[in-house]
Length: 419
Ligand code: LLP
Image (cartoon, rainbow, N blue to C red; front, side, top):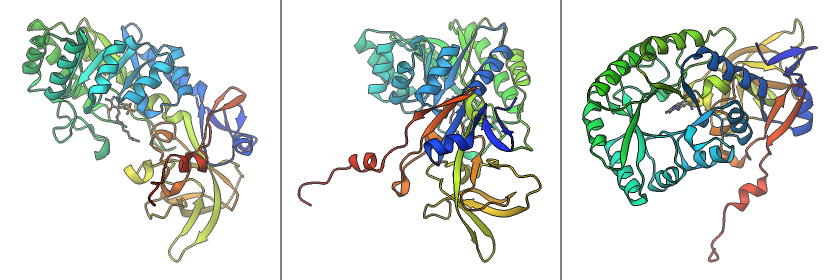
């Protein structure tokens, strides 16, 4: 089911017209569908029904408090990677017992705060981190629950910047070293190994790399248990891809669950899932307005009021996002153009060489599949304030992040008295 659809030739989010939102909040803005997120969460839950399973939402995908609260209400936990994410998760009423702390560079301050709150598990990524956590836990009189993140050296067949499970990547610990490091944990008085973890990359469409990685994970769990390590959960990470374009097919959630089950369901362990994009990616769009049509020497440009500072994915990962006209006109002539923003960089584009219905000044365009890694990766380059986020449910919408003001930006700076 799609939650963004045309009704009387106008794009709607659920039952709300995008034009009505634009008239109320101005452009550009992000717009999310609450029912889409709830629906995805339930689909995931039912794909894993019968298995004791924690869905730890990878909140880096979209960490707006409203989105977190919505998922918390459905029962989700969180996969976090920073103090900021930890505090956001707590503020959204995600219980610490459902929080998994991932990331290669956890600071002392972050480890202390997470220990103080009793998060469910620290996913360790290096021996140096293991040593640091053991010392901090000792100082605090605590035993820290940990997993090792295993790097299986499996190519996830995704974009090179979002591949994480090969030996070229900074993530995890080689599966060859796992046994030795679990021994080290067993000999660290302030650590206890409760699980094992793996995350091989993001926007994974071909399920085969999962199959290979989870087979390896299964063997490791069996070996670890045989050596007396009490592994009670298996964290399979996130990474499941979505269709970004109309022609694309996304992996079947039940097929993914089947692979997980086939390798990991009979090991007497609970499962942890860390989905990010799959839950929220197609639940959001970026709405922008056409400022100018420019006929260049070699090609045409549709210049819009959203730029790479608002949505970085096209230029950073050559990512494709479908672009729809908010007002649909039957039989309208097409144009072929680059859709570009106002930023002073040639990399500032939302799409290149795209065929779309002939656009004109003032038209609204919707950049699809922008619910994950959109607003969270936005910046203020060219002193462009961060844009608002809106959440739709059924027939109403609310602003869940206000538009930043230029004064907000200026107020962060200070000028030394000697200037
Ligand atoms: N768990 C860990 C440890 C991760 O590092 C990530 C994502 C996830 C879970 C969630 O992955 P997902 O299910 O969303 O694929 N900015 C990039 C994506 C970076 C993903 C980083 N790690 C993009 O826009 O494509």
